Length: 489
Ligand code: FAD
Ligand code: SIN
Image (cartoon, rainbow, N blue to C red; front, side, top):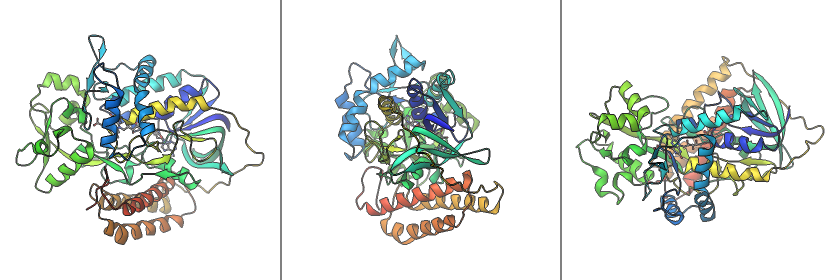
């Protein structure tokens, strides 16, 4: 198959890019499950942007840098923030109906922000953005959507990318493209406890690393402080905006423990709140207390959270809700410039899979959807066509059956990786133990996986997870001092 633009992934960044690219040529968008399956579809809180007269770019930049431990790329941060309002207006033009009051956008607040600057749609901002983008994509004759199509490997020659191999209907196919775009999102599935849906296995990152792309900042895994403390997969998130609208964190003694731990109290940045909860959990449960709000407000403002908690037996207006941190976001990724360029010619990346440098050592809340949008808006200005070299026919691996012992083995190794990462590359890390115990273990897992020669989605995902886990552990072992969400014991 031949196309102009091969987009891998159907979250905000892949869909937004596809809409731009379709004006210039044929787009083939592949996604490994159904089109809406993405982290984007789970986003609750909203999108940060400079939208209010009393706010300004310098203030948003300052909060982004402070939260990121000043490890950020300042140029990239400025670029994102200065384009933030236009990104929101683009979504509005496409049909996203953000919350409004007297004709103006209503804004909410999250951790690390010194200002209310987050545009939102109830507590299901991501679902609404995904719905609208998918609707627009489906209206486009120039965009072909291939669901249940797993990108396995990039097709490259002499540092130039010519497309990707995909698995579809248990067969491997080559899709050749003028330009290939990795928009595969993060890697939360590497952890036993995560807010991410199971699609987040770090595939795009692994594919890019295999072809020699540069990666950066992988040790900075963000843990969201307030997932519901119930063993469900993925962990159900209780948005930071619940605290933004007045809820408080309470420890087992009934104390508002964040009051004297940071000037922003319950709305300190995520790394700080997650660590404080982690400490408190040693003495007993930690809760979100939203009982200072009445049911009609909670039902209207947080319809999804209110309903889901009711299913689990909690009434937000009456009960304390037990919470615990869970892996949430990959701050590092494939190194890209302001136009999404990677080290390989004709290979671009954007969204959570990238490291544009905007997040530094810890992402500021609601800057992720913003980054994905702003950067995928820019890349479309760079599009060019190229010819695939004659005779470029990458070899195809054998497909393993989904019920084969090899698939089962990969599945079990996936579970081992998740346990290992939670134990050694979690909220608090011990560099000696990473070196002595975690690195040898992940190398063993990598070796076991290497011996599996045939492939399928489970096997490939597990190999990708092992490769990314190895690099995260190596990066965490190397960074001696605590910074942002990398906290060393
Ligand atoms: P995704 O939306 O994750 O999309 C990746 C796509 O790639 C998926 O369609 C996936 O199926 C596909 N894919 C992956 N691998 C392959 C493969 N090998 N072959 C084919 N397809 C593949 N951020 C905010 O800014 N504000 C919020 O309020 C917010 N809330 C969040 C709440 C939750 C519970 C979670 C989990 C995240 C939240 N985030 C939020 C983070 C944000 O949602 C993500 O960072 C962002 O949506 C990532 O977008 P993306 O396009 O990069 O990737
Ligand atoms: C949330 O709603 O708490 C998640 C926001 C984010 O990940 O930026």
